[in-house]
Length: 269
Image (cartoon, rainbow, N blue to C red; front, side, top):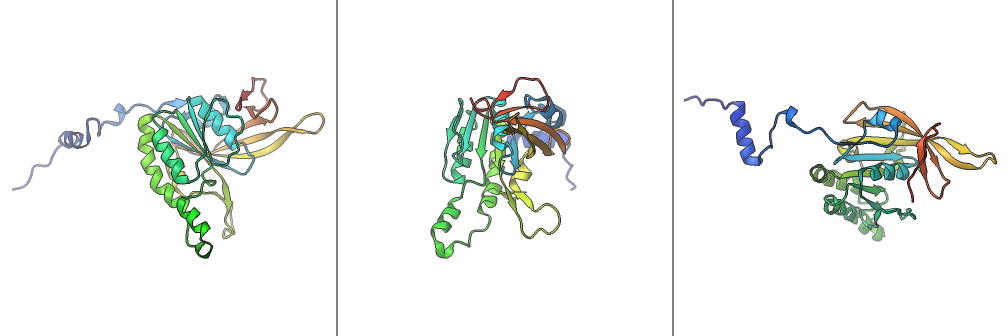
């Protein structure tokens, strides 16, 4: 006898019984993602806001405002855990700060702290060695056997963190560095560290670059003009750009839109 094919309703009821109520729903029943305003109209225009409970990657060359931008966006979300791998933050300004020794420790901290914090910042992914890298570095005779351990670890860890972040509403900011690939003859040889995992699992990818420096009347550099590029955006149009001003004065880093009279936003209190 030919079996009677199951209807869509029968299939959805069976899946909901197997995997829990609401496992399969109509697309129109899904809640809209909560977007956090960046505090700057120019950034909101190109990003649509920062999605709560997802991953945001910020990368660029040294001294291009990556940490300043990440902390500004994270503080817009609420309580922040700052995982400082470079030991470069001197003015915490109400942040919760952690100094791990290994990348595994930082990722495990994200897993544990996500339910309690609104945003977690890892600064930077490239500054944290894995346990395999540390073991290989101590063994000078066998120091070349480890190949891309950070990329392998992130490719296994980020898929596990994505549902936890979505369920808890915690936004993870990954600050990344650039490396030069000597094998690239045509195009841009600079690329972020960590392999493809950060690129694939990030909802928004932002690249920062220094466009110009700001000088006072004595030809002293008091800040710089930042160019912000949105290379990936799951919640809006990608490839947008905005210009911000980063000022060194006032006792810490200060961000504000370019050529405006709006009060600056203090990042470090």
